[in-house]
Image 1 (cartoon, chains in turn red, blue):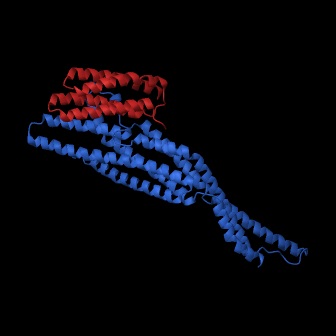
Image 2 (cartoon, chains in turn yellow, cyan):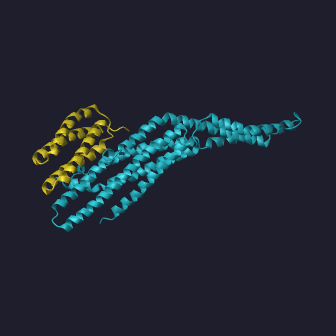
Image 3 (cartoon, chains in turn brown, red):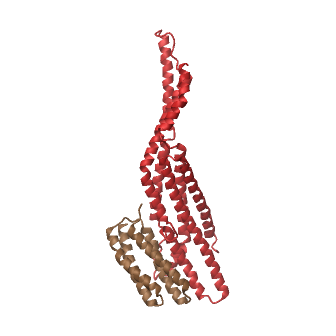
Length: 112
Length: 300
């Protein structure tokens, strides 16, 4: 019962981003900024749960090809989280990252 | 030394030869392993039920934050399809272990012993028939001790063959069993930041984040204290839930070790690995009861 390595990589990236957001939240004293972070975290955690349920999906080369853009977006997101003061940019980058994740998830659902 | 005494004196040596000549798996170890698989299955059911039960609030929070209310927004941490895959894996392991145990359970040995007794009776009857037909002077009665000795040896030989066969099967199956059980353990995760443990941790992080936001919005010290107390409870529940999953992960690895020990013929290691599994399963059961108590206490 091997887990799909691509989905596993996406799952791992999502978990790291949730953890990074949580650390940012710990340092935030502004309630409005904290709410933004929590809302984005909610979106990430939703994908974590979806990905978890898809982890047993059979490996697929189509799916593997989706990993590259996600990794690139993940790097942008990491950079964005470290400079979270720019709320608009942070939401934009997170949305972009989640868009790539959703593409991979939709594909995984089709082949599940 | 007459025939009966000769055989009786040789019997312990024959038994030793049979026992030493075949590296086998004991029926008791196979039954213990089979029971351990069922224990791990129950442990996994309890751990997964607790995961879905205690992370439910994060799922509802997400659905409530969406513009529309729809099914796809209610994503449980572990869905029925995923749990079904686990159940299938356990069902196959249970079947496998039960078949191995049946192979050495002694039912076939009993049949063989009955056949041996039948043969002894036939010898006696034939002897008596020959005697009554005056073809021989006296009936060649098989000595009762000798017949019993043969019966015992027959049973031992058959049992040893079955146990030897079981060991061969277990040895052949072992790499696959290791892959399945260690693969399942990997899915649970080696730490709170990966696998299902990671998923559960992320859900708890989100639930705690809600409290962090509420804390920042709180205006009075009393409100902040109430939120801090609620947060402390979440921390305890998160820790307990991760502990239950870690117990399951260790149980699955212990089950893999127990099978490897079975295949290697190491009784001591089988016992030790199954003891580890039983301890971990017992811990999960205790935590599961605590989770149920939390669910029944909505005020907490």
